Every structure is written in structure tokens, then in C-alpha cells.
Length: 100
Image 1 (spheres, rainbow, N blue to C red):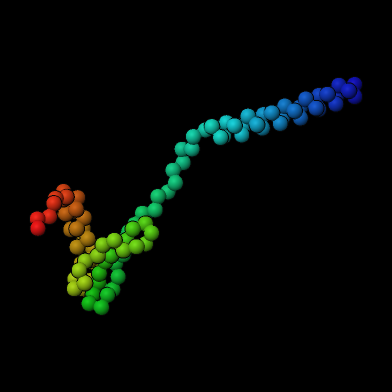
Image 2 (cartoon, rainbow, N blue to C red):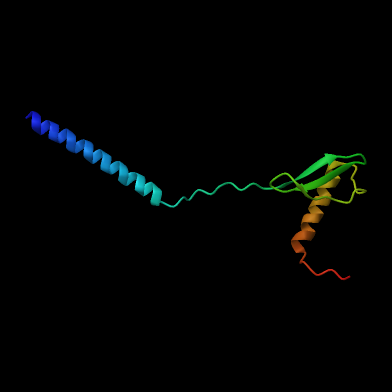
């Protein structure tokens, strides 16, 4: 009887180890459906010397665009309106070659 119980325990242990390997292999072969969250840039509005301004930044925080140095608005709302106009223009615009 003791031998039968030891054999049964040994077989159960071996079965446990073999199924653990199968589960690990299944996890390895299963494609990941989760997407890494991509960083996005943004638009910063700030108060400059002459009034409110904005700058467009990339995902790393580097400035990629901003209005000319002499351009500023008196209120934050005016900056938001200017940005809406800029977005509308960019949505409609098509790139063209500059004339020299």
C-alpha cells in the first residue's frame, strides 16, 4: 500500500511539473494584444514678456514649433482661438513646393 501511495505521489508530482512547462510555452506562443501607450506631444500656453504665447512640443518635450518672437496675445482665450484657426488651416492644407 505504501508503495502504491508513493508511486501515486511521484506521478502526481511529475504531472504537475510537465503541465507547468506546457503553460509557460502557451504564454510564450500567445501574441501580445496589449499596445504600449505611445507618448504624445502637446501644446503649451504660457505668459511671455509681451503677452500669452504657445509652443508645440513633441513626445520628448522638445519645442518643434512656435509663433514668431514678436507675436503674442493679450489673453489665454485669444491664444486658444488662434490655435483653433491654425488647426483648421492645417487640416485643410496640402503641402506644396515653395517658389524661390
